[in-house]
Length: 252
Image (cartoon, rainbow, N blue to C red; front, side, top):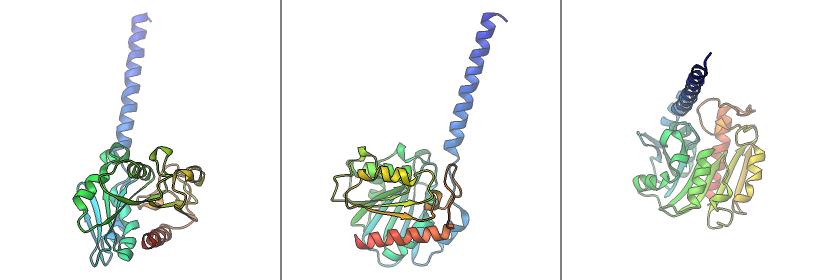
């Protein structure tokens, strides 16, 4: 085989590999974890809670008296916003909190970490006290925005299966009420990682580990590659999570 022919073959192979990698990345980004039908339907039917789903956001509001507290919650990487409705509706029903779950570009909060500013501007009527929160990568981005220059006052941060990095600048923010909820069987934000990053939160941050819970159980979107094996069922996990978040919001 001549040298030019060999070179053309190598170039063709290289191009083919690039196409395969790009195609794989596109498929990965464009196939998010979808909300499971049954938990979402139950959330939409929850008495006392109004669930509004639009092209850019999911909003959960109490049908009765609102508390004046709101949470902007960032979804985890490649997870639909609707997947967190089932986890949040018991909290909304119990506390009167308004929860705004914005959709992210390509389902990745890292592509729009300041998304909360628009969410508050568009859906903040009647809310006087805002928390920022999120699951997994969404939580890390929410923490970073809370520690940066958000366009609205932030009362606190709520992290689910997530942690703040040192760059978020939260360690000395004693003005923020912070809750970090983890799962003992989380295979993605595992207990060791949560513990290793605990120092990036304020000293008085509330940390709770739910025994038996894994990473995907913070939402309702099915299994997730690399996750641990849960030792409690999804309903028990969501119930424990709701009790933890409700207690935190009521105390702060």
